[in-house]
Image (cartoon, helix red, strand yellow):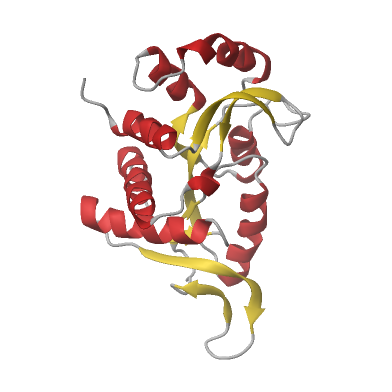
Amino acid sequence: MELNYKQRFIKFMVENGVLTFGEFTLKSGRKAPYFINTGNYKTGAQLARLGEYYAACIAENGIAGETLVGPAYKGIPLAVTTAVALWNNHGRDLNYCFDRKEVKDHGEGGLFVGKQLKDGENVIIIEDVMTSGKALREMLPKLAAAAKVNVTGMVISVDRQEKALGSELSAVQEAFREFGVKVYSIVTMQDIIDAIEQGVIPGKEYLEKMKEYRSVYGA
């Protein structure tokens, strides 16, 4: 069976210990049968492949943009490797930039490193996962302070498709409702369940618990 890029990405996460199955207590207090730890990406080879999956997601969804924005700190290497992969694999030469934690008042100054944003510029935000929408909430005012840019989308690795605390909507759905920003993910939780069922990755012993979890917390 020839795998599509979503299936290859799910397999990639499992092989690198980013996606694991078992019983985990999340920060929210929920007991989940799976866990995603993007901190396990730590080599050049992993980062190169990761960028290819982000680039494939952008290409598949036809997300328009001139500049990739990587929120500090996790988004910085992601924006860089995605920019490289977009050029190498899709012939799209995009700019990239990332924010400073504090505004630099000497040298070139400014809040952003890399491409200096301009009014009317189309930007794509690149992030690892979205749990509460905090990164987007913090990034939008910074972008607005730099220029009147258009955020054409935000790309994350996995959409948990899970209700946020105290809400019937997921963090991805809330981001669109609150800010009008469409969030795209390389894969969703349903894609992961499908990959187990199709034998792309092991874990059939966790399928029932995963479906139960989705029935309770799914958005």
